[in-house]
Image (cartoon, rainbow, N blue to C red; front, side):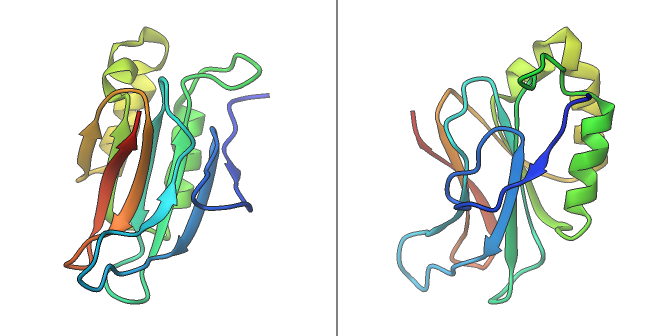
Amino acid sequence: MPYQIFQWTGDPLQIPERYWASAQAVPPNGGPLIDTVRFTPFTSCIGILASSGEGEDTQIVGIHLSLMDTNDNWFDNGAVAQVMAVLQNYPDNRWIVGQTTIWEDTPTVSAAYQNLVNQIGEADYLSGDDGIYSGALNQVDELEGRYIAA
């Protein structure tokens, strides 16, 4: 069976590897940013964040991608198609967060990763170390990728 991405029906603040979840954005209303979606810790993973628009009715999606699934299937162009199918309803404020350098430098996934980057199009990047990444609505009602903790 090829690499699969599944919809997460649990807590959108604990999105595990190869799952995606969405939730209603919570505006900060002058206070600190409030995470809408958050991934479980990344070691070599990346996350895709996007929103359905801007403003009070915004939905935010997070997709947690690992290099390989539990059956040793590598991320591939079939997985890219799965990501893009999820993103159809989330056309705005796209982010790629996490261990992007590892994905660029791993020969078995680098071409599929580049295909993903090309298909996502305009996006912001937050490339960093192992840790927890999230997405929150900022003070101007735009999605912001965040690095929470190691």
